[in-house]
Amino acid sequence: MPQIISFMYRYLIPILITIVTVSACGQANKPSLKEESKVNIPAFNPDSAYIYTAEQVAFGPRVPNTQAHVDCGNYFVSKLKSFGATVYEQNANLKTYDGIELKAKNIIASFQPENKNRALLFAHWDTRPFSDRDPNPENYRKPIDGANDGAGSCAVLLELARQIGTQQPAIGIDLILFDAEDWGAPTFDEKNHPFSGYCLGSDFWGQNPHIRNYTARYGILLDMVSAPGARFYKEYYSKQTAPGIIKKVWEAAQICGYGQFFVDADGGGVEDDHTHVMKHRKIPCIDIIHYDPATDHNFGAYWHTQNDNMDNISRETLKAVGQTLLYVIYHEK
Ligand code: AHN
Ligand code: ZN
Image 1 (tube, rainbow, N blue to C red):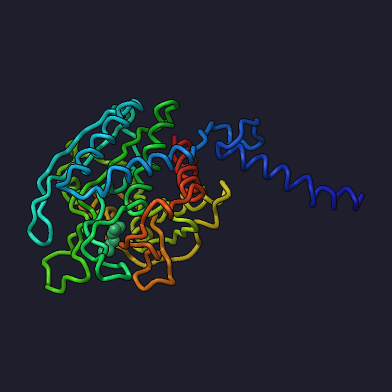
Image 2 (cartoon, protein in one colour):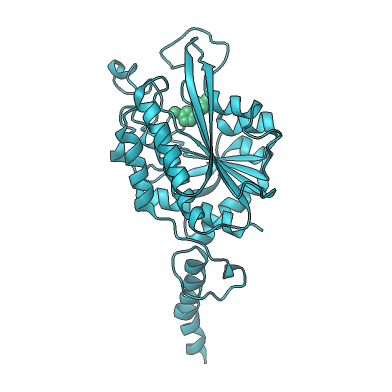
């Protein structure tokens, strides 16, 4: 008898737990044992997300007022339409901290637009015109590839759109690709500026949503979610305004086997697209953002450098984030 019990503990229980968690996360089609895992969750394809990242980077830096930016905007619109979304293009002329007028475009993709019960997922699609954190000062005025800071997050959203297009969850989903997030005043520009310069597109949309009085149950921002070994800590404003969403997402990651990416610890507070959406629309929002206590800015070693390129994009990280979000979305009622 003791041998049977020890056999159960050593082999049977771990095997059963693996079957339950794997099938609950859309990675196998085996019938599940748990009641909640009756929900059929699609499997996030990290190869698709990787390709969507590479396709954006291939346009060149997506700096507003350049041809690469226009071309990449059109790429998003046609991709999202091909996945069956209702797509809105919101064009706006937005002033930077240094007085340049940007021809910006926020891109909104809606699934089940008539459904009142909605969740919002968002990221920024523009790339920074500066490399002001590069170790070499000669690079300060060069734009970045923005493989991680921009493209990877949008790629996760594109792959989610592809999955949602083939199998609808119970709630309506809005995906927003915000423009003009990353024209914040660079460190080499030492003048005093009236505002940080970041998040111009989301700040505009917050005051002028594509649908009058737009709201959603909650919002989730993805920012720098594709570097190898990325770690996501609980961002301060997210925890303040949307503790329940933080809990839900971190628990989902744990269940799906991605607990090492979603660290159970607090990060700092970040001004990002989610703070602007919260400010204007009062939607509780979280920011899933790479946090690295080892760097002085806390954003990871490649942040705002020439090294934010395709050499530093990880399918594993893309999968961890994308699968966790599918788990969350498909469990909503
Ligand atoms: C600030 O540096 C104030 N916020 C970070 C927003 C950001 C820039 N995310 C990516 N690039
Ligand atoms: Zn940036």
